Length: 270
Image (cartoon, rainbow, N blue to C red; front, side, top):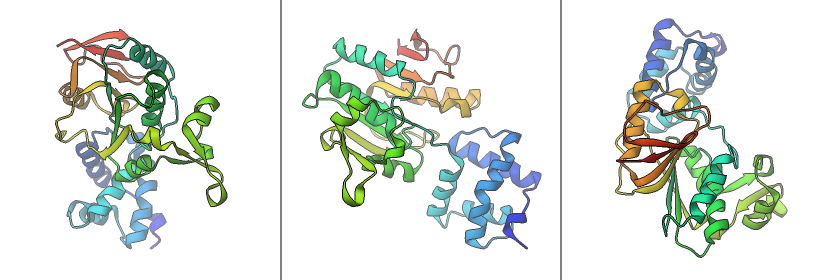
């Protein structure tokens, strides 16, 4: 039997939908069934399994953590680009100029391949300078994209949204075997750090942040998951700190302790 012809039963779809919700907080609608089938079929083929139930048992048995991570990578969305939703970065520049804090600490809580982190870093470098004290932390549930972000090495096709002035100032153009790529400047990367973090699990460490970006992620969460995640983020946000969400997202009426200062930008008030 060809793996390409394997169908996913209602029971199997329900099992995977519940699993991805439990692990990553993502609420998958019925419309995502074919996406799920398409992305997981390649793993069935690779492992020589003949059903999605067999793959479910393989993943949940806990004997192969790398396969668990592969499944997460396949089922989570990593679309991003430099200066996405640029109004947020205009606000950030104005905030940094206000000297509201002297050594700002920022967190990109779903950083994907790092474009958001380096955008935040370029904005702070422009306002505060590379010699000032500031830092940007990027985290994501996917080890694969975190490692990519940490390298800060991109194909030229990934430069979408990156103004040429910033590219010339903060990016190194690849030559020779690296032609067609660019690398974020080491001085900029020294202000960044990266780690894996699943927002559905307890957030480890003792760091607190002046600004947290969590953009274009909560559109995949149901209301209860949104509340749970935002409460975790608030616990890491400094008093009078700011939480920034995507332009298609809103926190109004979701949790207490936040005041909207601009569309999609909220200040902690308690």
